[in-house]
Image 1 (tube, helix red, strand yellow):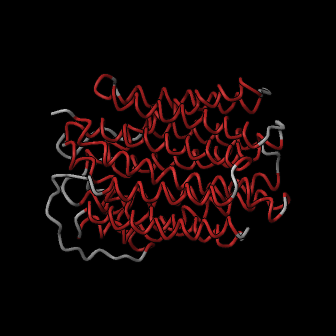
Image 2 (cartoon, helix red, strand yellow):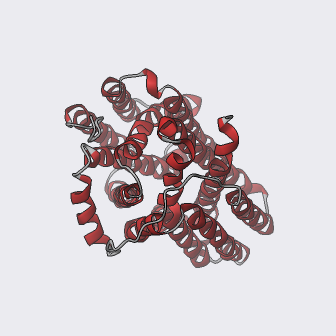
Image 3 (cartoon, helix red, strand yellow):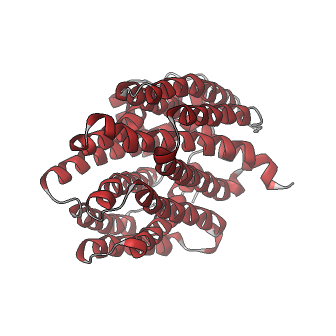
Length: 401
């Protein structure tokens, strides 16, 4: 059977959702900052990032329950239907220059995304089987970063050239496209199960950490993956401010640098998924993380700008993508049956706790030090993560191995 027809509905649904998330968030950073004043730029960037990720911290337990209790395809379709009225609210915000409507729409997009994420990623194994987990995961991450790329590029270009009503039409067109593509989803799902797991966020996190210990190395995998998301969030926020303030770039040039980083990450995810059976993860992943460490430290200690700066972050993104996919695939590989929904929800919760922490750390560093200091911090963090990956026991083994 040709593998592409069975994958495209999931990939396109994921792509269009990520596209709208990033198009909306980046537009808010480029346009809404003009409504409130440049002195609030860092605050607005942090608020936009936090509004999109905060729901993952509190709603992941409910999302995990839904991925176990209901058919995952139905959860995805309902979530995509909800995106349409959210985009109407966002459109109203830009039409009336109302920063609160824009921020509320970002928050509700975070709620929508968080509630169907475990179902969406749980469908990878249902569609491709165990033998295609790495392939499906690599392609899902590739289209996610393509969505980030295009959403960022569209926002950086349209912020200067398109009137508010044009932005609104595009919001709605993307949302409707995602809803339509979700109706073409087909998957061999295991039957839904009754579920009584708590939906209280803190208790769910504690119980999930304990439950994950029954799967060899799962907690270590989730920590390593969460560090990736912390770093990705820090890079995005840092480049939005550093490129414009320290390097003197305009919105479009800043968008190109962000695009270079996202293109690199997407390419890394795709390549990693394609070659996953040809490399030793115990050697390959630490090599990637070591390369990322060196690049961050180089950015701090040497002044680079223009095309070289964009190229530097393309390579950094490429290594990040190569680093990330093995951990995504390992979660799906380690956890059998419907329990996967809970562990994906737990992974989401941890990842977005780290992303939320990134918003706070970014604000803390930039309020007390120059923005460039973020690169030094990330280099040190990635170096410590490399040591963690090297010395973690059972990172790449399952209970059956």
